[in-house]
Image (tube, helix red, strand yellow):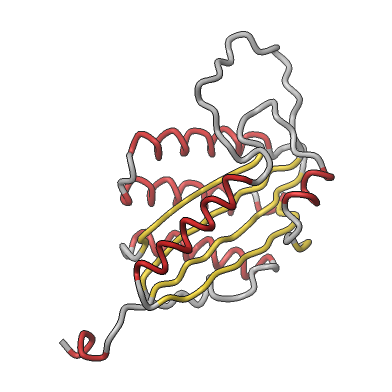
Length: 193
């Protein structure tokens, strides 16, 4: 009762970018694609999306030796509608970045057996959560802070605080490449770790 009298619910919207670089980063695309398919099948079920987010965060934490650069941004809102509008804005921006669009209609049956292997993978995670999340509401352009942020995302799922979850990644499928020039052009906010 006291909370309701005090006023409003606080919402945080946060987007983090993580750039992984190295010859061993391509398997991450398989995990991201599987999660994307599960998320599409879940049709917006926040529990299922949260479980996939946990998988992705745990995978990224395991691949920390390949973390190359990162960035984050976000804002705090007192109205759910305004937070939702900002989530939609970030969604549109992430989806328009180079190579972040998934195309599940293309078949891989006529693909050559040896695909070029990308050395660069970008993962963009956008969430909206209720309350205060100090580990997301800080500069994440250093490895310890980024690790805490990924753990915070996992905890938000288990505490049922997540209100929106979006994951975009580039390149969207195995065989596509993300060059250093494309990184500079489409992800200028990245800061080396």
